[in-house]
Image (tube, rainbow, N blue to C red; front, side, top):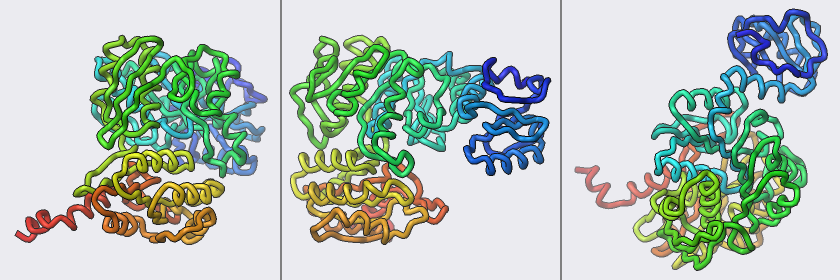
Length: 488
């Protein structure tokens, strides 16, 4: 393939050698360490010194062309105004613009992305549509799962995935769209048929610095540059305010405020939710395995999206009846009459919603085990401590991917929002088991923060760890029938 075939006509080039666009390239790289003979290297770094170093190493490894936003004194260097924009479009072109042949739905928001993408794809698949999912838990299609490096991967991985999914027969892709992906232009050049906004609450301020920056980044997605139409939750104040700035058609959903898709007569139990939904004036009774009012909102978003995609009233009514919650999203394990809830909640709003739901449903006390990630938004730690103390009867602080921070420092930050007595057990497995042992029949133990994650990240290393494995392992060790069987 020639370089000119992957670069758009208007690449914003400042200078490059004549004839460079006729160079033959083997593949696209964004990591100089992956470069091989004949590759084109896109240097995404905004640091000029690092860019010089990375491009030099890429050249030494045989790069056919190096592209950055700096004027570098190499014969095969191209300087562009916005390297991330060019990279995103180049990846789409390199992979045959497979994204244009797929019907793509993007879901953004602080919370709810994984659940909604899972639900929409599940309902579509139930009615013979070939739908894939890309998000936090991985890539899913046709009963198979593949690892995904980020909630919304970089453009090279993303478009390669679109290419492979198209070739395998996918018609729809329902994907999570993170704020980082919007800011870093990973999704530029993708024409989303529908964009969904769930809510905007505090998260990722380690990267965005202020809530305003984070909010405004989310809102950029709701424009005709990215989407053809929007589905927006009006129960979240920041999402509701986005209605005024949206320049494409909008369908709204909610429980507390007037909307196009809404629910009444809610009944939530530990077995699921039952409610009456009004979907653009079509009234239907919905029974679902999803638990809690916030998951009813996720169900309403799903109904709105599927309505726009052409599903009929019968399909909308029945579609949510059989789907299970996404892995790591309010998953309930009945532990001899004690309920263990595993949930990814890792933001103040996410933790609050999960604990409110547990408090409403618990026959006894609510226990919570959680921590906060290291080298991430420190401002949310005290808020999460305050929320846990307010809504749970028993709180246990523990590790959650401490990364390069000390566990005791992270826990101390959480404790600044707390006044009452609580447990501190840094080793997460030990903390989970301690809370299970301390609970009684009818109690709910919420294990928050990691959800479906399969690792614990400490000092740059990822060690195998999974909350589900800990809970099931504890059950096996404490079950006399299981242990007697082992002895036999």
